[in-house]
Image (cartoon, rainbow, N blue to C red):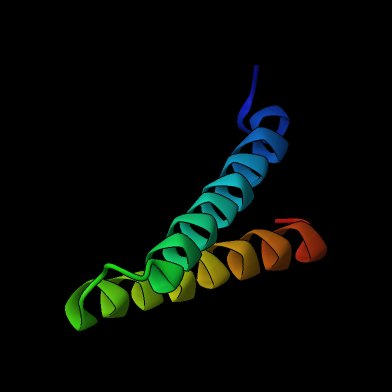
Length: 64
């Protein structure tokens, strides 16, 4: 398997990791027992997940 054949799997894994980051971040944001610091960490996870998905989609659209 060459690098070109592995690219769709890598992009899919990137998108999946982004979705998991967003899911975990939203759970942290909605937790009623969480303090302010933990909620801020959740927001970073959501932002990171959005970036991962955006990178995955951008690479898919450009065909890199």
